[in-house]
Length: 93
Image 1: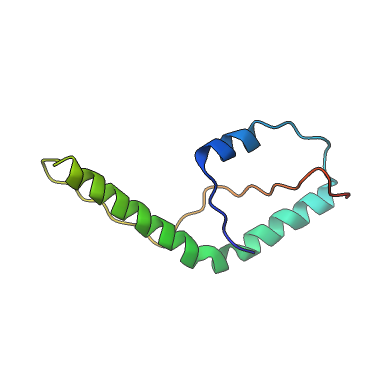
Image 2 (image 1 turned 180 degrees about the vertical axis):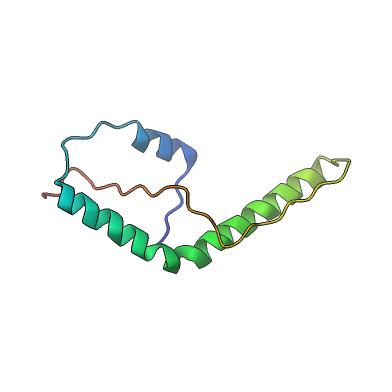
Protein backbone atom coordinates (compact mmCIF):
# COMPACT_ATOMS: atom_id res chain seq x y z
CA UNK A 1 0.00 0.00 0.00
CA UNK A 2 1.47 3.37 -1.01
CA UNK A 3 0.76 6.92 0.04
CA UNK A 4 -1.16 8.72 -2.68
CA UNK A 5 -1.14 12.50 -2.49
CA UNK A 6 -4.15 13.95 -4.26
CA UNK A 7 -4.49 17.45 -5.61
CA UNK A 8 -6.75 19.70 -3.56
CA UNK A 9 -9.50 19.70 -6.21
CA UNK A 10 -9.63 15.89 -6.24
CA UNK A 11 -9.78 15.77 -2.45
CA UNK A 12 -12.65 18.25 -2.39
CA UNK A 13 -14.52 16.27 -5.06
CA UNK A 14 -14.12 13.01 -3.14
CA UNK A 15 -15.15 14.55 0.17
CA UNK A 16 -18.20 16.06 -1.50
CA UNK A 17 -19.55 12.72 -2.72
CA UNK A 18 -22.46 11.04 -0.99
CA UNK A 19 -22.04 7.51 0.28
CA UNK A 20 -24.00 4.96 -1.76
CA UNK A 21 -24.55 2.71 1.23
CA UNK A 22 -23.19 1.94 4.66
CA UNK A 23 -20.39 -0.56 4.90
CA UNK A 24 -20.86 -3.32 7.48
CA UNK A 25 -19.09 -2.32 10.69
CA UNK A 26 -16.70 -5.28 10.76
CA UNK A 27 -15.56 -4.62 7.19
CA UNK A 28 -15.19 -0.89 7.85
CA UNK A 29 -13.11 -1.63 10.95
CA UNK A 30 -10.90 -4.03 9.00
CA UNK A 31 -10.19 -1.39 6.30
CA UNK A 32 -9.35 1.24 8.91
CA UNK A 33 -7.13 -1.15 10.88
CA UNK A 34 -5.25 -2.09 7.70
CA UNK A 35 -4.66 1.58 6.89
CA UNK A 36 -3.48 2.33 10.44
CA UNK A 37 -1.18 -0.70 10.42
CA UNK A 38 0.39 0.58 7.19
CA UNK A 39 1.23 4.02 8.66
CA UNK A 40 4.74 3.11 9.88
CA UNK A 41 5.67 1.95 6.36
CA UNK A 42 4.40 5.27 4.97
CA UNK A 43 6.62 7.41 7.27
CA UNK A 44 9.51 7.75 4.77
CA UNK A 45 7.13 8.95 2.04
CA UNK A 46 5.34 11.32 4.44
CA UNK A 47 8.67 12.72 5.66
CA UNK A 48 9.76 13.27 2.05
CA UNK A 49 6.56 15.28 1.47
CA UNK A 50 7.26 17.30 4.65
CA UNK A 51 10.79 18.11 3.48
CA UNK A 52 9.46 19.14 0.04
CA UNK A 53 6.95 21.50 1.69
CA UNK A 54 9.73 23.01 3.79
CA UNK A 55 11.84 23.57 0.66
CA UNK A 56 8.84 25.16 -1.10
CA UNK A 57 8.30 27.49 1.85
CA UNK A 58 11.92 28.58 1.80
CA UNK A 59 11.85 29.15 -1.99
CA UNK A 60 8.75 31.35 -1.69
CA UNK A 61 10.31 33.43 1.07
CA UNK A 62 13.50 33.81 -0.94
CA UNK A 63 11.63 34.72 -4.14
CA UNK A 64 9.54 37.28 -2.26
CA UNK A 65 12.71 38.69 -0.74
CA UNK A 66 11.01 38.29 2.62
CA UNK A 67 12.54 40.38 5.36
CA UNK A 68 12.76 39.57 9.03
CA UNK A 69 13.65 36.38 10.74
CA UNK A 70 11.85 33.12 10.35
CA UNK A 71 12.31 29.67 11.69
CA UNK A 72 10.68 26.82 9.79
CA UNK A 73 11.58 23.24 10.45
CA UNK A 74 10.04 19.96 9.46
CA UNK A 75 8.76 18.31 12.62
CA UNK A 76 9.52 14.64 12.10
CA UNK A 77 8.18 12.03 12.36
CA UNK A 78 5.05 13.32 10.67
CA UNK A 79 1.86 13.40 12.77
CA UNK A 80 -1.03 11.90 10.83
CA UNK A 81 -4.20 13.77 11.72
CA UNK A 82 -6.64 11.60 9.83
CA UNK A 83 -6.92 8.61 7.55
CA UNK A 84 -9.60 8.31 4.88
CA UNK A 85 -10.26 4.89 3.41
CA UNK A 86 -12.21 5.33 0.18
CA UNK A 87 -13.82 2.25 -1.32
CA UNK A 88 -15.35 2.47 -4.81
CA UNK A 89 -19.07 1.77 -4.86
CA UNK A 90 -18.62 -0.91 -7.54
CA UNK A 91 -16.94 -3.18 -4.98
CA UNK A 92 -19.38 -5.66 -3.49
CA UNK A 93 -19.19 -6.08 0.26
